[in-house]
Amino acid sequence: MTSSTLADFLLPTGFECPRPAAVLREGSAVLEAGRYAWRAAGERRARRATPYAAREVSRHGDPVILVPGFLAGDGTLALMARALRAQGFRTYRSQIHANVGCTLNAAAQLETRLESIAMRRGSRVQVVGHSLGGMLARGIAVRRPDLVSNIVTMGSPMLAPGAHHRSLAASVDLLVRLSRAGVPGLMSEECVAGSCARQSFGESRQPLAAGVGFTAIYSRRDGIVDWRACVDPTAHAVEVTASHLGMAFDPRVIDVVSDSLLRSSDVSALEVDCGESA
Image (cartoon, rainbow, N blue to C red; front, side, top):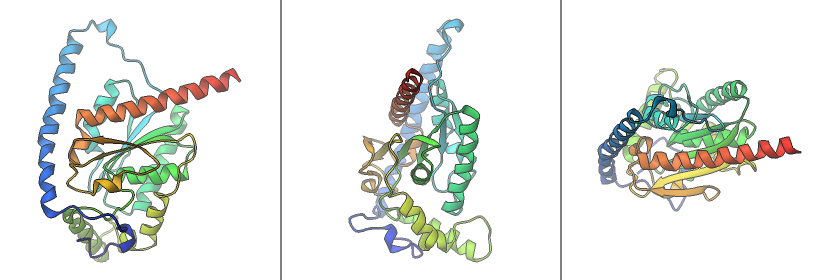
């Protein structure tokens, strides 16, 4: 069952909302958080055992911005950001405190943030997005390939944004009702059923420009969205075993994200070297 306010085109034929009991699979997020803590503790021990002069980590290519999912803020990706920084990536916050507003406004805010980072670093930016954050990344990469070199989506139902659990549908309905009541800064009916929703969905389906990498991470254990909606045919799809929430901090998912970022950095470095040689 979908949200009563959600447009039908956001749930195309062939996709469906997870069953009510599917959300129980999200309980594995506790184990995934423990897995992160275990690895982090091991890395701290290894770092303490390494001479100070040998601790320096080499920096990798393009900067990385992390974009949170629906109802979430930058803090939900803090553990992933910490792990990526330890590997040599320059990470940046999206400056989204709570992803509950109009998707077009959120995309415009994120685009401005990307412009600032790209100008500061003198390079394009890699974007890692969780759930709704990945859909925002996909749309911006379509519009601004001059700003984005690579996107990595995690549990982002780009093919069917409406294929989500009833708990999310209830949250969407509540935000729309509050917006109708005059509360500012929240998703309105236009964002889930009108021109705003149609534009956002349309942009997320357009092809990416050549030179923009795309990795889509999905999990069949996802209890929040239909995993099939996360497998964009234009992306390098990677399956993981994690809950929807756990994708934000499971070290196995972080490894996949890191691999994608490294591949993109290597390609960018090669392009620079070829340009200088020419």
